[in-house]
Length: 116
Image (cartoon, rainbow, N blue to C red; front, side):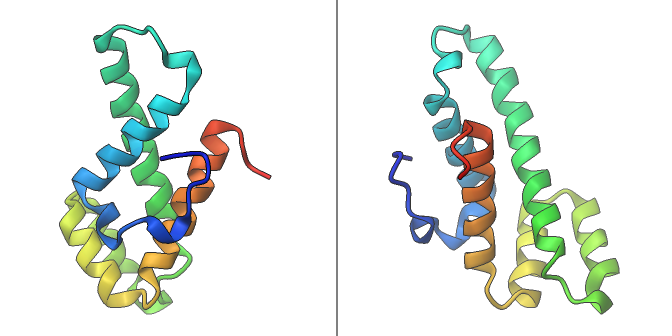
C-alpha cells in the first residue's frame, strides 16, 4: 500500500485470511529494516505480524460489540476461524467496513512509525 494510503480503499473482506496476508505483506515491504533478510526470517516476521494484526483488530472490534453480545463474540474469537468472526461482526457492527479500515490504518501508522 502506498504512502498515500486511503482507508476507504480497504475492502470489507479484509478480515478474511487472504486480506490480512496482503496487508501484512505490504507492511513488511514498507519496513526498510527488513530488506535483505532471509526467507525464513521474513516468514517468521510475517506470521508474528499477522497474529498481531488479528489481535489488534479483535480488540478494536470489541469497542463496537453490544454489551449483550460480548459472550457470543468471545465464542466466535475462540473458534479462531476468520469467517466465523467476520460473520458475527457483519451481523453485529453496522459500520464494520469503516471500523476495520480505521483500525488497520491506525495499526499501520503505529507499526511504521508514521502515526501523527
